[in-house]
Image (cartoon, rainbow, N blue to C red; front, side):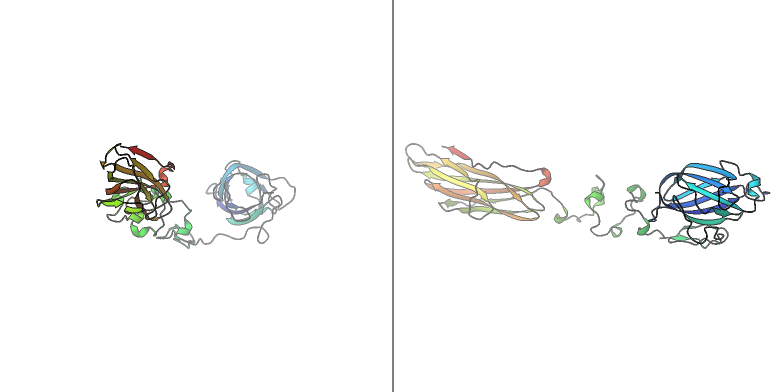
Amino acid sequence: MKRLSIFLLMIVVAGSASAAVPHVFNYQGYVSDLDGTPLDGNFNLVFRIYDVSSGADPALWTETHTLVNVFEGVFSVLLGSLVDLPPAVLEEDALWVGVTVGTDMEIAPRLQVTSTPWAYRAAIADSAVVSGGDGGGVGTVTQVGSGAGLTGGPITTSGTLSVANEGITTDMLVKNAVTGEKVLNSTLTGIDILNDSLEADDIASGGVASDEILDNSVRAADVFDEPGVAAVRNASAFSLNSTDVNVTTKQIFHPASGYVVAIGTANLQIYHNSGTESRVRMSISTTAATHDSDSIVTHVRPPAAGGGLSVPSLSTTDVFPVSGSGIATFYLVGDRLSGGVCDIYNANLILMYFPTAYGTISKNEDPSEVSGD
């Protein structure tokens, strides 16, 4: 069963200057559900005029308004605009208006009207009851006051209501009602924007250009998920032995979760004895003086007879996941597994950070092995 709450304001307009009674009635109303939510849509409204307040007597006049638009609860119809109001009907001493909304029953009791504007309020349902008093006219409109945010009232005869300066507050604005086209260019300044109130979704793609960014205002902490690079070179030379040592070390800042690609290179000087083999290992680790599982082993084979000096190069690459924002430390670690005297020098460690926005990285977990003369 549909239930509506409807407020009807009847404004009487004379059909001619000499008419004894008005020929046209302007009905304006506000429609809401029982929870007070205004309705939107199109409704069929039927209006009838009777010379009795109740009963089965036929109507003196009937007019149907189809698909009356109701926007945010407000509607207006002009009675007599579709079917002429006979002068004989309007000359009756007392008249009652019956209103039917859609397929509901006609409002009971009927609403009494005269040639003076009256205000009515009714509850409409399959069996409707008019709220307040006996459901008849409750008086004339003598004054219109100014509501919140309005100026110009009270109006007792004629006048104009307008929006007062600063009369529209945030409570009066529907969420997401103000778009970019409604904001005057160059009118928003820093003091108009609440601290930390703008998110990435609030800024249109390409909406902020370099002219909109204050010089020296963007710090490293303000840049989200951007690549970064760090590098170090240690030109010192020292001997490798069977103990893991830090050849060099470097830190890199990562603003968010992602990956650090690490590249380590170094030069070697290996002195061979006849018939021996030198084996040197170098890897990148997040723990000082400790090889990780991806260490690279280089075999350097001397001539079959005699001894000599070999000067090979050594390199290793690895990928490390990092979580959140912070600083990660990496070590280039080396040691000698076997063979003659091994010196290492010109060690380089390059670190490159990539956020997860660029995709995930899968690395080869198998250690590689390079052999050479």
